[in-house]
Image (cartoon, rainbow, N blue to C red; front, side, top):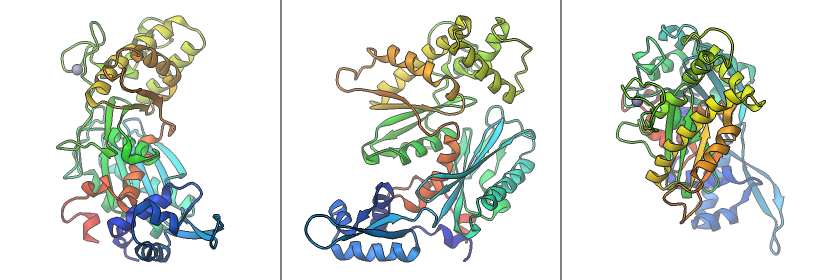
Length: 418
Ligand SMILES: [Zn+2]
C-alpha cells in the first residue's frame, strides 16, 4: 500500500454520511435503519454498505430481531481498521495520542519540550516519539491514516506554518506541516490548538449538526473555538477565536498590548503563580521561563484553595470572575447554547471556576430569558488538543463535512503528492 492511499477519502458524500451514522451509533445500526435515517434508497444504502465492508471500515456484528420480519444484520464501525495520530505542541510538553477509528485513545505519551529554540530537533523528536507510540500499540503503520498537529496560534494554515507563537522561542515561521510530513512520511494536518480542541468536542457531541457552542481553551494562553450550526467556524485565515485581549474591568495584570486586565494575561497560570509567590501564598522563588514548574505550582495553588486556604482561593476566584466577563461577551456575541471549557490549565481549577462562572452568568446573559446557556467542563481531559488533532485526520476521512479538507496544502504537499 502506498503511503497516500491510506488517506483516501471514503468517497462520496453519501458514503461519509452513512459511515458517520454507523460511527455515532452505540449499539450498531441495520441497513433498514440507515435507509430511514438518510432517505437514500435501499439499493444505494446496500451498495455503500458493501463498499464500506470491503474497505474494512465497518463490520457485521450479529443479528437482532425487530418485531415482525426477518432479523436484521447490525453494522458497526471496526475501530481497529484505521488509526490516526494526534500531536499537541505546547511550549512545555508535547502530547501524543493514537486514536482508533472510533476516536478512542488507544495509546498516549508525553515528551517534555526543552529544546524549544530548535524546531528542527523538536520535529525529529516528534517523529521518533510518534513511531514509538505506534510500535508500542502494535498497530501496523499502514493502518495509520495520518498525523494531526495542534499548535499555539497564530498559524498560517495555507502554508502549514507556525507563526512565532508566544512562549515558543525560535519558532518564527516554521514550516511545521512540511517538515513533519518529511520526517514521518505521513500526511500532516495542522490546526490551532483551540480549534483542534473544538473539533474533538464536536466529534463526541450528540446531534452534531444542531450544535452552537464556544469552546474556551485554557492552555499556556487563552483561546476560543466556535461552532455554529454544527460547523467549526474558521475565519478568513483560520485564526478565529483570539479572545485574549477582551477587557475584564479595572485592575488586573499588565498585558503585552499595553492595557491592564485583558482576560488572557489575567487568568494565565504564569501571572497567578507570580502573584501567589509575591504574596507568600506559595513558597519559593519565581522563574517565568520554567513553564513546567509554573504548571506544577499552579496545581499546588489550586490544591491549597480546595483545602481551604482563603488567600489562594481569593487569587483564583478573582481570575474566574474575570474569565466570566469575557465568557459573557462570547456567549452573547454568538448566541451559544453551551460554553465548554477545557485544556491543561483548566483541569486543576475546573470545579472552582465552574461554580463561579455559573453563578456569575446566571442572570447576566442577554439570551438568558430565551434559552439556557449550559456551562460545562469537557470530558476529554488535558489531552484534548492532541485528541482534536487526531480527530482532524479522522474527520477528513469520515465526516460528511470535513473541516480537514481545508487543511491540506493546496499543491505539492506531502498529502497531495502521494
Ligand atoms: Zn491585551
